[in-house]
Length: 266
Ligand code: OOG
Ligand code: NI
Image 1 (tube, rainbow, N blue to C red):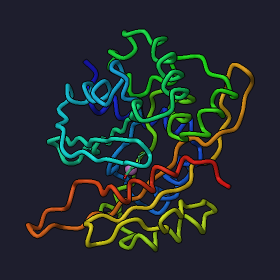
Image 2: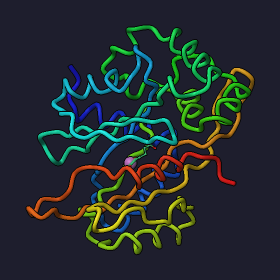
Image 3: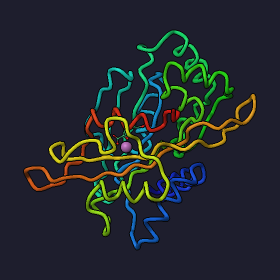
Image 4: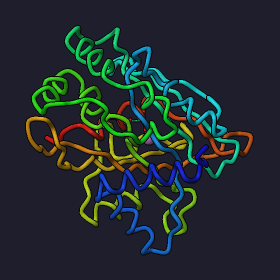
């Protein structure tokens, strides 16, 4: 079995290759003398019986991760859970799924047909979380899905791979304040997600978050190569609970806005 460290490293390499902008931001922190640690990594899927959250989570559970809280996103028709590792230096894993019983028959039927094409061996492989798109996809079908659910279209186009990595601000030396970090990111030419304000959450929520808007990257479809939003980079600062320990959960009303970081920029 692959070690957790090598799986996370493979996921990071896949993410950087696909999203050069995220890697450039990481390099900006390194150039400032930072050691960048990840607060969490996020994955997306559909709640199809073969593919729900558990199909991704099972690989992380084998490597020691434990299920913690769950989150509901009524309007976006999403449900999510987060997982923690006993070694608190390891990033948390946040896995969401689109609730197929709540979407239109078009999206549901399309997704069911896609899922029928995945061999079980891919789902059961220890590298499933970075295995990419296991089905054929056209840009026109991608665009139709995006009209109803940007989330559905993102998973249809990219398949299974990290949606984002998240810089743990608490472990940075040069940035204490999330707005200072945001200014640094913007000064270097990157666009932040402004939905609900650039900083999502407050100290009273024990979690402040911000994220870049995913830049468009070329994706090969069966009807040609098209630029579509890829992955984004997130920044998270955690605050201590009354017991002195840093809050480790997520904040649904903030996450709801963070999801929009892969929307097409207007
Ligand atoms: C996940 C969005 C939520 C967070 O940290 O609250 C999130 C996604 O875009 O897949 O990552
Ligand atoms: Ni996140």
